[in-house]
Length: 381
Image 1: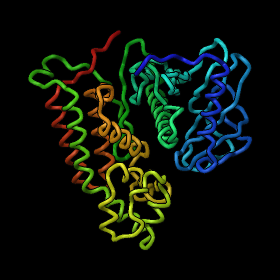
Image 2 (image 1 turned 180 degrees about the vertical axis):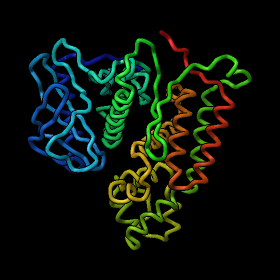
Image 3 (image 1 turned 90 degrees about the vertical axis):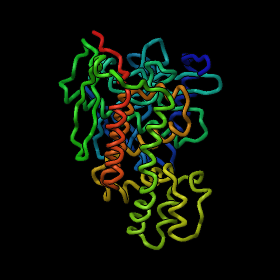
Image 4 (image 1 turned 180 degrees about the horizontal axis):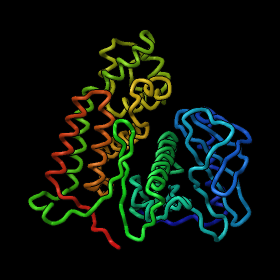
């Protein structure tokens, strides 16, 4: 990225806050609920919140003048319509004084980015956060990249917010299950879900030279090739699965109801208004398939593929976007361990959909781990 700077001017921060709120309070996406009780460690606050059934998160925004003047943005997860009391999961706050807050607004040319410094409160220390965070970073720094505030298309920004909030949920759950681990030593702990959504905690250890002997080093081309191969196993079966699932829900109008009317206009503008079943299916590429699953998750797919974690679907669309727009910056994001984790996620996603495709991805994962060196940095005290 070009040279960039953290926005510190209070007037600029307030303008950015207005833009942030406009995105988080769009009436066609979010429903407003007044005077909800939001609890947090040590207290509670009555807030007007905005909840999206599509993105499965709620937010509350307000200005707070006590103990450090700041613009507050609170977030939590809610699969269904919010109840009377909500639990605060993470804050993305912007300081209007000299104090330090978790959120940072960064200007890079004409673009403004929303970022987070990894401070998520008493649940875990920053070292623990960064050891378990596998999302996008700003400029490869210890700043979680939530999204570009100045981008015209809001859907991508909201998906990024949702993914960030979901990652916070996972990290806090790992911390809870591990007794609120203290990172006197840099333990890199990563959580994976099996098909029954039972958590497995993996403590990464550096491979010894003997374990890496005779193995190839990962490069940018091999990383992208592995990810593309995994998608090659998914692409032939996912459109048919989606078509059959939606047709069972509404045989005559499934294409209009669940695809044309339920996806953003820019996603469906090249799709036919009428046609045969085969013509519809042939138009579904992997990105469109994932968007259809996301758009119809609550009403259709959560009941058909019950064992799939909803966050895996969003991981897939991010991976696909990365592969389609591959660059050195994206390549650096994918280490040996993250590729192994990615292949595991893709395998788990496909298991209830097509066991043969899941098995092929599992074999690809084993072959990848046998062929390439683990590039994980040694643990440091």
